[in-house]
Image (cartoon, rainbow, N blue to C red):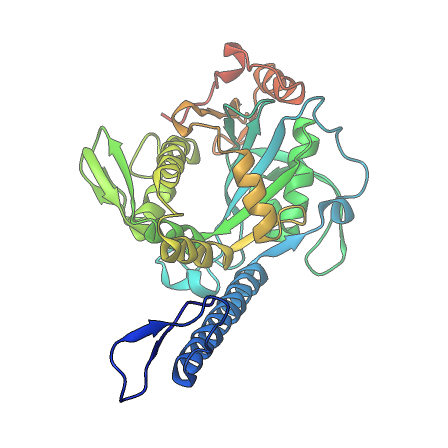
Length: 366
């Protein structure tokens, strides 16, 4: 950038005159040094911002653990939806290892799928349906690869949540696909620590309950009314079973579904773009405890998937429990109830509205 400069006459002269318009004086050396340092500072700022941005991205991206479902499961899988709809399997792992050990969740060895939700996003992605699979459901486990690399043979009448502990998330996906005939496009798994960290990072989640809940097993102790739950209380809330209903896993599914809607609503209304620090804190907490299929195993892919879901209003999400009945041989276990379960999965397979008859479960858990 250049400017017309005023030249001063010699000491003996009076007044001043403007330099001829066809001449440009050089900026004083001191001013040239100032602009040089400003330019250098801007370059360093851009480079450092780029470097920090890349470091942060690499740090968070490296947290995510990915599983190649096609490689782990093979080609014998259900067909994809006939529309642009999507099916996502969400697993809540109850591992007590690592950061989970200090969360008051007991000292049970191994890990199971404490929560399992099939989230169906129909074509148009304006509304979603979440189907909870009770952890005590007896299922036929397909042949899978065990965690030690050996072949785990197929077995009938095993508890659904035991599949994860023996063979990991890919086998859970395969089990769900075989019991439902529905192809899972993606899966996401979050453990106790990640769940707690997410809730704390967004400043808590508000829920309303219509009765006092006192569960010495989970630690939850709240009165009827509206409460803002922090991460620890939220974890107690979704794990509570003895303080409500008949004390079974079926009773707490209602609490889990209620909390899911409240959590998604809270996330949707948070101004993350207006608070980069909060966005980073949420991403850092979540990705450290996140396992996904390889199709979502990066911040970029997760962001793209999240943006595609942006039109869904959590308040319109429908929550359903897989219709089950009490097992005739073991009343502490349940099995899929027919024809309701079959009708439910057929509607999901065809990306159609779920009939009311497919939403009624003979076993309700009180």
